Image (cartoon, rainbow, N blue to C red; front, side, top):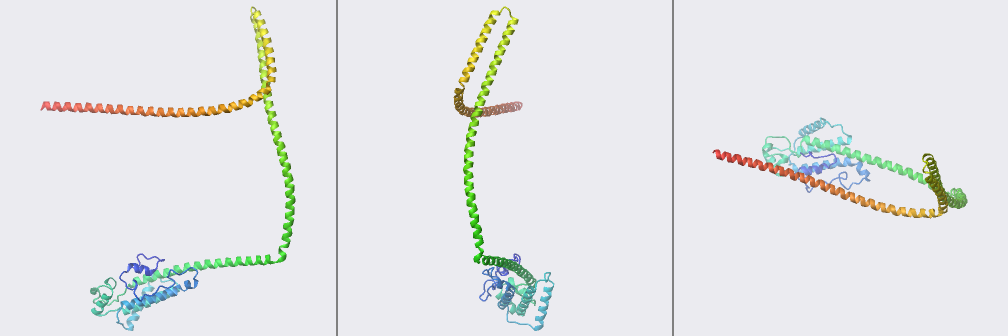
Length: 410
């Protein structure tokens, strides 16, 4: 019952204190032994000598604690040396039968010391007769030493823990000590590795410091730095001149680009007017073909044909005049292009505004359609409810008729 909730990392005395409320030793008797440094919370990771001697301190601490507990719990009776040797042999035989008997040398020594102390406790706690058992029962609670009826005629020594519990306690304690040893060893190894690395770094820094402390070591470096500074200054001057030339070339390229764009616009206008002229010439040719066709087909329309020819001649003259005027108004069209661009921007803004309005109208229409659909669904549900109500009324009328018929028969 003392080790039901004990873990290898826990303090065994804290576990005993939590599970044995009737033990005067655990609950702070006046003669309790203070905890050693291995189990105290004040132990720091840098105290390596205390960690290395933790096993010996823990063994001595347990021995002293068990002796003090035995003095509180036992009476003044003592047995013969033969009984002591026999009990000690039994305890050692029980330890040899444990499945975890193959522990480290420090653990075996600690177990042997604890067994010796336990045998002393058993020898001192032997009772003979009802008087001694009643005195022990008065001094310690029945949960630890047993009742008077159990002690009567029983020569088995009564202790705080049984042999199996002590063996289990020793095994768990040895495991805890081993885990502490492994943790401390790993911490020592880590500290040694860090110390070696620091030594290597210190040696490297010392070598560099000796090299830097020499007066002639920095002189060639200074000369090299001065030469590099001179080269950098020369290259900086060359780069500044090249930068000025590049900026001039960039400005010239920008001017050439603007002129090229202007020429492209002029060529586009020229192509447009040439296309219009070709279209006008083609139209004249079509009119001439129409004239010749009319001359061959309709003889009575000769006068009309002459009129058409005159009209065609006048149209030709007008087209020539239009072409001349178009060439003259070429510059005016360039100015009009700017106005057209401004008007296009205005119209684009107006178009965006109209599109926004159309979107608002579409959303409103969609909302109206959804509301119309909802109204139709509500009308359908109302009609269905009305039909259901009519069917129920008919059923009620039918039932009333049946009841009247049944009453009439009665």
